[in-house]
Length: 191
Image (cartoon, rainbow, N blue to C red; front, side, top):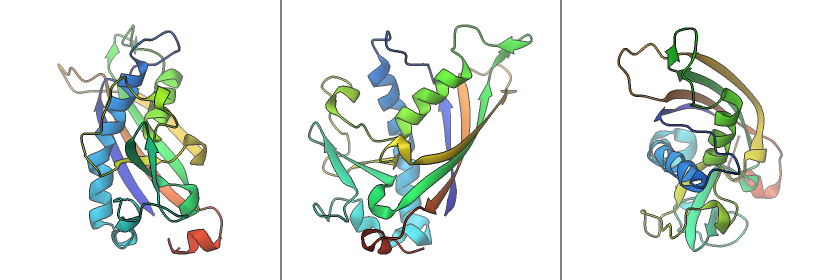
């Protein structure tokens, strides 16, 4: 299964010394939710499987919903689906002269922020303080249950050519979901 996600906006590096790193990652994570929700609605491979991510199945080996600090999250690339992901990322960045815009962080640290934002939070400490899901009982959809489901990735940085653009980063992420293992648990996801 293949599809494309996009993002336009700030993508700051979130090193250990940055106090707002959880909020930055959560903002990017929330950006992808509507795209993943739309994927569930229209992709033939996903349409018959929405009960595993919409909260109607709440326990057992089939559910993809995990709760972090009382908030539901669902990663589509998940051990229960037996799937892994390959990512092909085009990262468009503004240039000044012959170099990337200063003080915006280097590419590898931006990718670390992106990978953290593509996965569901693993524990309470990865969410912003006092964060509550704006989706009520429905899970916030994430591409990955955990970023260890990424098997291959490529990153191509290039110039953002939009004149007078205030966009910090524009990403096009081509996702290839592949079956990793055949198990009874994963068989309900088909091939």
